[in-house]
Amino acid sequence: MIDNNRFSLFHRFIFFLLRVFYDQFEIDGREKIPANKVLFVANHPNGLLDPIILMLVLNQKIRFLAMSRLFAMPVIGWACRQFQALPIYRGSDIGRKGGPKDKEDASLKNEQTFAASRTHLQNGGYLALFPEGSTHSDPQMLPMRTGAARVALSTEAENDWEVGLTVVPVGFWYERKRMFRSSVFLKVGIPFTLNDYRQNYENDDRETVRTLTERIGTELDEIVLQAEEIEVLRAAPFIANWVATPEQTDELHEVYDWSNRLLNAYMTLRAHDPDRLEAVVDTLQDFAKDLRMMGITDPWSLEIDEKRGRLMRSIIWLVLSAPFALLGLIFGYIPFRATGWIANTVMADDTTQTSLVKALGGFVFFFVTWVVGTILFWVFGSGYWAVLFFLLAPALCALTMEWIEVWNSLRSLQRHQQVRRRKGEEAELLLAQREEVATEVLDAVRFAESLDTAETS
Image 1 (cartoon, rainbow, N blue to C red):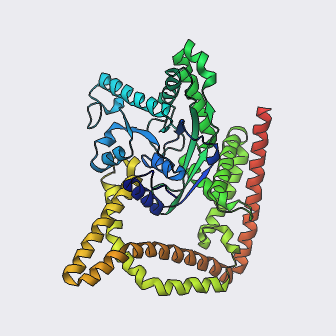
Image 2: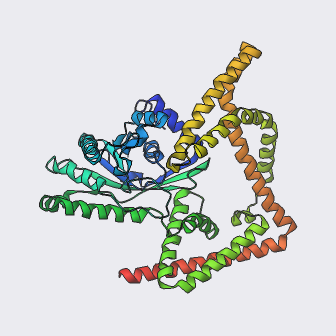
Image 3: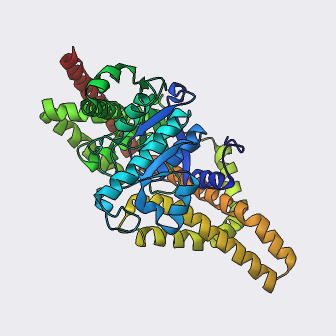
């Protein structure tokens, strides 16, 4: 739960919107994070939402750096200031709105930002930095910039190395970052302190900054899902689901771990045994084609034996709640469509903040529609209906989202059971094919891991 005494009403509203937009948050390694004086270094796949989600998941106020141009935007700039973000001035933004005037101005203002960052860490605060320098959707991390290392080392150096700063790597993985009701997973790496860097920094600060930057990049490589091609990165979670054992759950950390193993095996086989990799890929493509032809998205669902009582309760709930869900759909349709249009049209030139615009825009348009609807009921109906609408509208929207999720689950289950009834023989063949695919992929993963072990030993 969010500590109400720690966060403002605005913060809690943003956290609420994120919990509506994303249906699941999970973090692996929370226990590794110290109580204070922490510098988080993380990959940067989703703009301003990355540090805000880190705050939400950890229930901690965390300052972060954001590019200066964001502070010049009407709504986003105000949000940045509410979260006490610090502006970073990039050379590529010289002359642009919110950017520095020239290189000298950028250097001066950035030093002020770094000074504020050091003070915050010295006082025991949490700070999140993103060494890639900018947010992106590439399948691999961008080259590490030196800012995080410089802030970390200079913080200790200014205080005779007595701050006790801990650097904590964090990897973000969004199931589908711009998709409504998708999931977010955070992987905490191995924290480390900076005591071992003191002598080298005093002898050669620039070389030590470079060395620490390389270490940060190495630590993030260990916990961030990456691939040479975006298609491979996107396919990994689906393949992980196909070849998982029946005992495995759909918990995000298990999907992440399996995806990471698959991606590592892919890279190893690509380098050492491309023929075997090609054979495995062909097998997976054939399996995916068969699944599409059968109208199946989850091969494990062929074995689902849902109890009739539970199915009947779900159906009855859908029928009884349908009129209220329809009202929520009508009420929420305008905000939903307007938000999507603005996010995809207005932000077409800068898609890095699309998710944030959808979250903020959804709240703004929902609030406007809520107020306008209440006024209309008051003018054309009565005060009773206006108050009733004002009180029930949020609950109706929440009910509609739940109704849609239950409906989609039942539709998927119905399609899979229909396949089993009408195409029983084909379904059995598909089950056998799935087992063969899982065995072949698992054997390839183990072989790749044995190659990696042999190289490191």
